[in-house]
Image 1 (tube, rainbow, N blue to C red):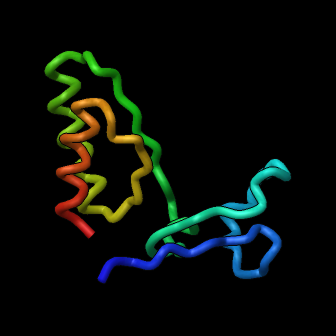
Image 2 (image 1 turned 135 degrees about the vertical axis):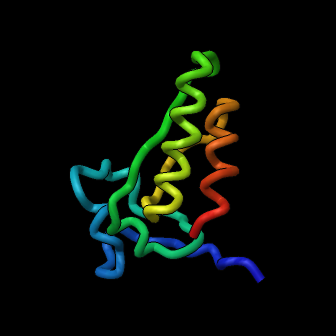
Image 3 (image 1 turned 90 degrees about the vertical axis):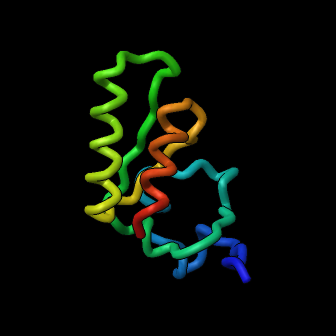
Length: 95
């Protein structure tokens, strides 16, 4: 069975500190999450890519994704661009 969905209220003490950093607009009183919330308290890296990029960038990105996978860094992305989708395939082979 998959991970259960959980509702996180920003007013509760169980809310991960990472969600409270900075100012959360009042309309965001709760969040929905699936999986291990402890990941929010680790270093996170956001990845976004252009749909078009030179081949050398693509090869460097594959190498970077392998390094990130092996180092255990959590990566946040929409994974919409083709290179992001390829990167997701690489990342999913790690933990």
